[in-house]
Length: 378
Image (cartoon, rainbow, N blue to C red; front, side):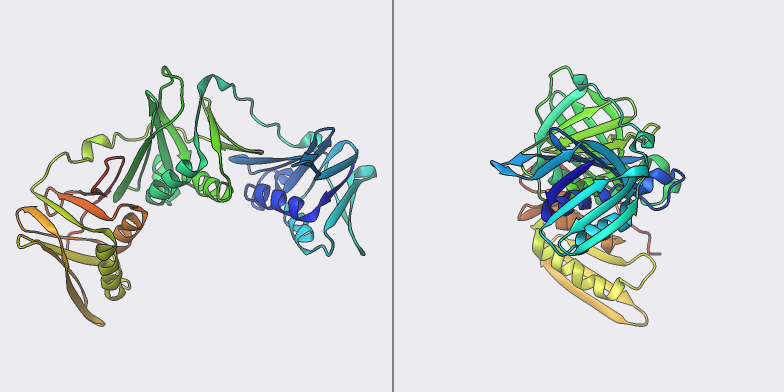
């Protein structure tokens, strides 16, 4: 195999697939990046068995040559050192040539490296997914849905299925749900899908969602999604993103979402967020980072936090209050993460009791919501 390529183009592709490469794996070849050169261009693949990212670089883009393939072939090169080399090369063009026993030369201007490669035939094959369960939606929408839900997934592997984000699809309406049992975030949107396509228990690992968000950071246009029994594939431009799905049934979260309550509040999103951030300056060293709201019938929310060793803070935020006065305590970090994802100017808060989950959602739309479980302070 032999090819030449612009270093910037190569570096971007290597950076993308490196997100799926792990140095901690029981399969040594998966610590490497697979490179395939053929008549159409260059394909790079990184995988850790749970997550696979593949990037295709066309020979030409916008009538400009990106890759010149002199000899087709493939090789697997050690991922970390290979990525470091490409980033540090001095020139604007890179030449890669694979010789006997997969010894690979990497040249750029006066610099030349020799890396010991591996046989690409030993690299695991990508799963074959059929497009009978495919739907599509804009990359910007997918990024928003991940940002508004992914943070609420559990991080402890002991929580099993809750470390993932639930995807559900019915009649073209896609819903993401994430919860760690202390809080919940939900977002839904209309997507392009066959009317008969229904998905009820597709659970994508939270770690995969995090990497997907990074991959999509600079992507525009549409993303195609294909789902199989244990894999999900997302196609975004020249990038293929595979992830395994978590096994097991995600809990029914609809039963914990209140439809009514004793107290309903409307307040300015940023004003409330900033008050919580200030209160968290006092509470952040505590075990649960607890702050307290007292929702007053006179039309305000009193935000309080105190620490025996540090001090206290108290301030009032204007609000429209319907219902009875109520005091609730909660984790400030959970509240800040939720409020930061809300894009509306004002929010609606629905409380059913001092120790029952309370709902937060944009005041002007019903396609997103967050639930937080209060903390007992006495």
